[in-house]
Amino acid sequence: MNDEVSKVVENAPGNAKYTSPKIQKQIANILGNKVRVMIRSEVGDSKFSILVGETLDVSNKKKMAIILRFVDRGGLIREKFFKVISVGDTCSQTLKDEICKVLAQYDLLVENIRGQGYDSANNMRGQFKGLQALFLRECPYAYYVHCFAHRLQLCLNVAAKGVHDVWKFFSTLTLIVNFVDSSAKRHSMLKIFREGEILDLIAADTLEIGKGKNQVCTLQRAGATRWGSHFRSISSLIKLFGATRATIGDLYINGVDKVQGEAKAVGKALKKFDFVYCLHMMHDIMRITDFLCQALPKKDLDILNALHFLSITKQKLQEMRENGWDDLILKVGVFCCENDVSMPDMSAPYKKGLRNCEKNITNAYYYRVNVFYNIIDFHMIELDNRFTESSLEILVLSASLDPRHGFRAFKREDVCKLASKYYPLDFSSYDRLALDLECEFFVDDVDKDQRFTKITSISYLCRQMVDFGKTSLYPMMYRLICLILTLPVSTETTERAFSSMNIIKNKLRNRVNDEFFDDLMVLYIERTYVDNIENHDVIAEFELSGPRKVKFG
Image 1 (cartoon, rainbow, N blue to C red):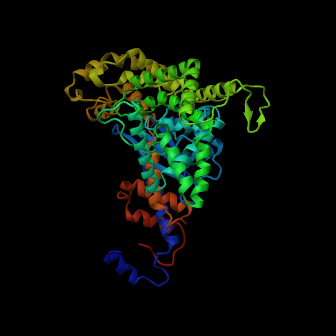
Image 2: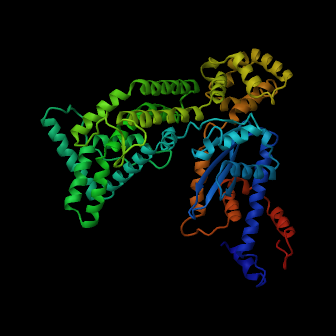
């Protein structure tokens, strides 16, 4: 507390210091509302997108963050944290009602939404039942675009867990990795067994040697967030399967009683055929999808290449579904033989536990149709849900406005189609004619203007058009560019908001009521606005909020 504040508090009446938690919350609420009003005024009449994410706070309360994305008057893309809400029920309809309530409170019209961005939660991504579908019914031009910054691998894994065997596999994988990697001693044991394994393979002349090859590695944990990779975890276990089994076996023989019991259970799970089968199946599937998952977050990846990678990925998954079963089961059989894993007779009737399956099917049918085909179908459906035909076409058409290489990708017909097909409410028939006419002059004008020679992105082009007065010459083109930039191709802002949540509410300070927490969040994240709020405005609003014993100012 500085000297001036200390002096005021010391001289204040004993019963009217205005330092109680209740007063602090009232002042924080006034400041928070003023920040939201300032953000609302920046949005103005512009179209905007909503970015929504949900998470659990430290008190295990479900929180939903709402961020607004829009292009301001200076041609800059803005993503502003607006509200965080506690939601007891996370079904899609409840979330939509809460979002609409917030938008209505600040006079933001649902019909002005031109984009939606969500996290990977099931209730936000479904094509028919998800939140995006509910908003599309009310506003058909609120397009959903998958966040390219997300680790798509995690989203695919969430979908894959809809297959019971795969859900069991990932649970067992986590159990094994956590058990072996839970202490430095076990980690060292794993390395020792792996080194011995490498020496034996070299001695048997079955392992290629060379500089940098056969380095001793360790098991990788499957990431619990979208920034982790389950593919690396699966690959490491396949590579270290023998050393992992030896480590668990040693702990079962030489460990203390508690560890022995745990090692027995983990070792039993490791040697089950179902686990080994899913281990190799998921490795082969993820090997195909991993390239796309790694490529999408790259900032220098252009849209057309990204869509090309997507097409190749779907094609390879389909080829694997049609022709990959025989190679997979052969590889699993060899692996089981090498690692002493019992493999069932594929022609025998499938048994669930100790009983024959009620349906008269063979093991081969079950593992091929119920598991292999099923999991690939889940991946294909998830890719289709995340990259719909409409969102893909929007991205392809918008790529024609890419200013790199002297507007080499510019196509007049694509620009006009983008406006007429996907933004008919924003362009009247007269506006579309004006846009067509602007296309004749726009590229030649901008390409010959030396001030536009180093433009590398559509967002930079938008700013330059404002700075150099091109918006008045090409108003329809500028309007279309703003609409494209409004699309939320990244939802990283919601992740940063959740990181801020842990600063405001943590294990040592976990009793913060919802309204106060919401106000603190917006004041912390959008703190640049607070400097522009005048003290006398806050004091005047505070005095109007209720009777006071002493004048606050």
